[in-house]
Length: 205
Image (cartoon, rainbow, N blue to C red; front, side, top):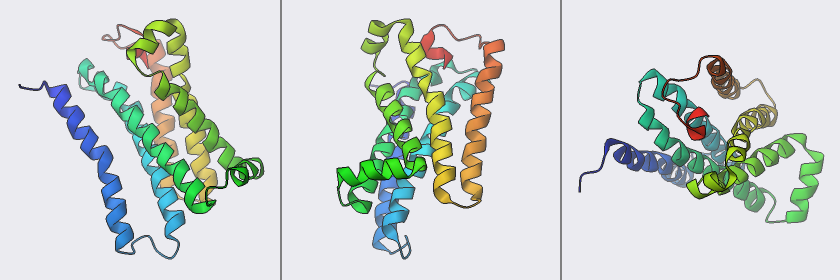
């Protein structure tokens, strides 16, 4: 059976999204995470989730630029991988930094606003992941589109969380924030000039 180009692209994207896990494992074995590997591992998971969020939001502009509306079909895959890496980021923080203490996590959320921003972004991602299937889209109707506009809130919260977490003028953090801001501004512009291939709610994000 010959796979269509989008299905082949999906397989490639699965491998690309898995690759950072192998790289992190090898880097850890070689002592490449420095004197504080726990902190670096936690940050690595969060940055990978942020990078995948940028890729997810880049699908629509690329589909329009390349005149390839079929590319929209890979957006859900990238969004779910973004959520998976965000879960890894949260789990690593809970288990490695807080030794699995849920009460301590609640205390940290109340004490550190940057963690609260990250938690809010994760909760929105959770809602989006749970309703990303076509069955949810049919059941929710127009409400599905409004719910999935929440990805824009995730972009703002996640970039703010990262900027606040690094506690320094990190060029990388500002680069991610700038890319996300640009993608959100593109969508604002697109509201005035909708893409010619947009034929449904899932295509207009």
